[in-house]
Amino acid sequence: MSILVVDVGTSGVRAAIVHPDAAVSHVHHRQVLPSSPLPGFVEFDAEQMAAAILDVARTALAEGGPVEAVGIANQRASTIVWDRATGVPVGPGIGWQDLRTVGTCLALQAQGIRLQPNSSATKVLALLEMADPDRSRDLCFGTVDSWTAWTLSGGSAHVTDATNSGMTELVHGNGSGWNDEILDALRVPRTVLPTIVDSTGVVGEASALPGSPPIAGILGDQQASLVGQGCTRPGLAKATFGTGGMLDACVGYQRPRFSARGEAGTFPIVGWRRAGRDAWGVEAIMLSAGTAVEWLRDDLGLIATAAESDQVAAGCEDTGDVWFVPALLGLGAPVWDFGARGTLIGMTGGTNRAQVVRAVLEGVAHRGADLLEAAEADTGLSIPSLRVDGGMSANATFLQALADACGRPVEVSPVLEATTLGAAFMAGLAIGTWSDEDELADTWSPRQVVEPGRSADRPRWLEARERSLATVPELSSLQF
Image 1 (cartoon, rainbow, N blue to C red):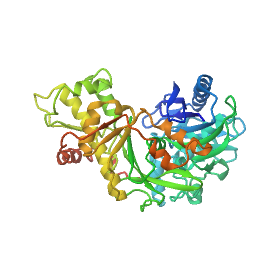
Image 2 (image 1 turned 45 degrees about the vertical axis):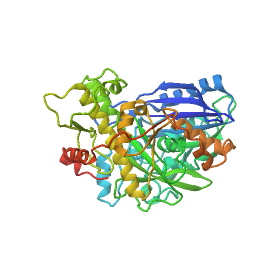
Image 3 (image 1 turned 90 degrees about the horizontal axis):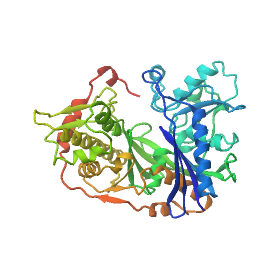
Image 4 (image 1 turned 180 degrees about the vertical axis):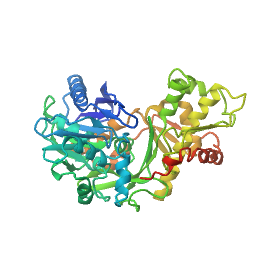
């Protein structure tokens, strides 16, 4: 009952075999990097992505197959439009980070339509305006899950699951289906849209792969990480610390009470859909996490590698009252301010390299605590511990700082990227490998539990965060 998972991230494609005991083997990765042809533009080559999907999937199967099913995990909101007959993209894929449609979003606000530039809605509009201004061509729109399913099925499956469709802003807020009002405003033909399917269930055959195993599970990456870390009961939460940071908390089968963004800055999300029933969650976002460590490495030269930040920061007991706010691209929850900027304060003539590096790691940790507090405020739930994955979960100094800032245990995922497990769990539910969400929750076994060691000075942190706000007032005025 092994399962092949194809996990398409922002910087590459990974395939792996997941076994019934949740062990992961035969992992293969191929880099597919986005490009930035202009400031604010983020694009990727969808044909290159498709080739990488088939390459890693076939390689993993050759070593670890056969399998009973295929699961898909993917970067969300990134947008592709392609010709239905030929399967050839009509232009570049537009990445979720792309901001070219900010002006369109502001113009739509004047019409009473609030959309975010990071969602798919205005990205598909941009691609259609470029390739099919009179809307006469037979085209397909899809997010990366749709493109992956299309690729694996040889063009027979044009689908998206509820976790991905919910991030397009082209559906009703309750997840019930495509929103005709938004589609009409953007002139998006219904014929280009994929069919919205459950996150778990067979949607077609992966006929492009040996044995044509069924495609049985689809999840957006953050929801896949949520499920992969066993957070399938209300009050369980995970945070993924990669380039940015995403905290997702499970709230159960009742949709959060707010329609778009909660008072504490979180967003309602579909955690997964099974048998037509949505499990809901909230998501809190920080725009800079690992990018702050990359800034230390690439721009300041204080560390040679990202991993070295752990060793260097451990060289001092504390930051010497130096504080860093990782707002290099603005702030997310709980204070959404696109004009906030990275802030490093409290330095003296005696401040050393180790203290600055530690201040950066502790700053990201405090932002993690911000997200946790925002999720609790918007849901009314108490989150007893925080599960973590992503690249920064390998950094011991950061993990301790996170536990201290949150004031509760941090449980480290046994795999660095839990998205693979989440997609496998969804596929496994469809074919009977696992029986239900409670069994998925019981699979959780952290690699490490980090307990709080000392009290972090949250009031001092909040003072520093306040000083980072409205550095670029024109951007601070933008609200989506």
